[in-house]
Image 1 (cartoon, rainbow, N blue to C red):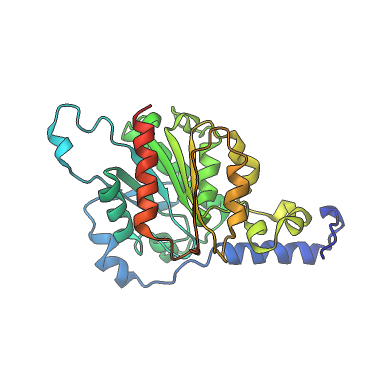
Image 2 (cartoon, helix red, strand yellow):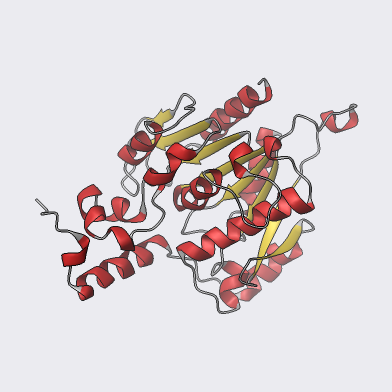
Length: 288
């Protein structure tokens, strides 16, 4: 068993070590050469660049699939935009096929942005961090709402794995410098979400020991989300155990029926079932 000591009694070296380990586990960003991005991401016609509040430049893709509805009067009026935050061991260039399929199968626009310190940002020397992820999603929010003029009521914030961190954070507060509030989004969708970085790595008791060093404390923020929230998680997840999704679901103001997929883990969630669940959530939001 683990004894719980107040955080201020921890030796500095022990506390610092835990913080470093949490960050290392949270951000195992892919190491991919520039040639890969030149052949993939940099050729995308939907590629745009965002600037964070700290002046960092990050790429993003705005996928807008065409459908028969586009030819009807007001055909795009009910189409939602998914503001997508990816997992920690992938980047924007590596998941392009996934977000293309997501947009097509859900008949939704997808705005997929990059974290500071990942893909092209990493090649420019930036390092990933919780603060960098928050600056990144804030930049994406300002671009979508203040430049593209997408109404918050037409946005669904979607985070997968570590991407649930910036997603929950955004959906629980206002954004400085934006005329629009994330509290007014249509919904929030989370796949295999974390309670926090330390709770995934060490469990709840140890997360209290090193509270000040923990990152993405979703368990503190998710109850502030005013929009409907849907959560899907694999019951056999060894990376982010199911209890993370279940505990977060219990804290929601407006919970949508969750999807616990029996026998599946973190990286083998069946795409058809995940997309079907997400589509059902969007359909429900469109009927409101």
